[in-house]
Image 1 (cartoon, rainbow, N blue to C red):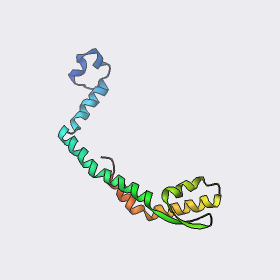
Image 2: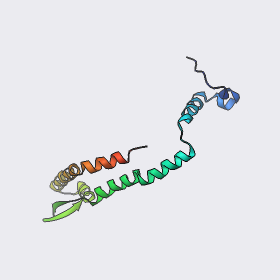
Image 3: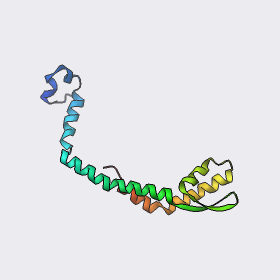
Image 4: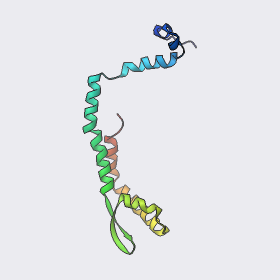
Length: 121
């Protein structure tokens, strides 16, 4: 099947060897934002999606759960629970895993909101 490419593709020997790429690039260029729109999107991104991304990081790094380790109940943040995955004691690894899953379940709604707020533009 012969595709009808724009005439500019046949103007130069260098463009003749890449007709599909040039044609698709030309088509895609119709959907680009203007420079003014790009600047606005960048400014909105700083206040919108960046804030949601920071919220997700703050929630997951500061949420703590009580956990018995070395005979003492300690409040461990999620990163510390995750680090227990490499603990030499299998029982500690299992309990850490269970506590981590329970914590994720508790945080599912705010984390879903953070994910939805920072989705790709």
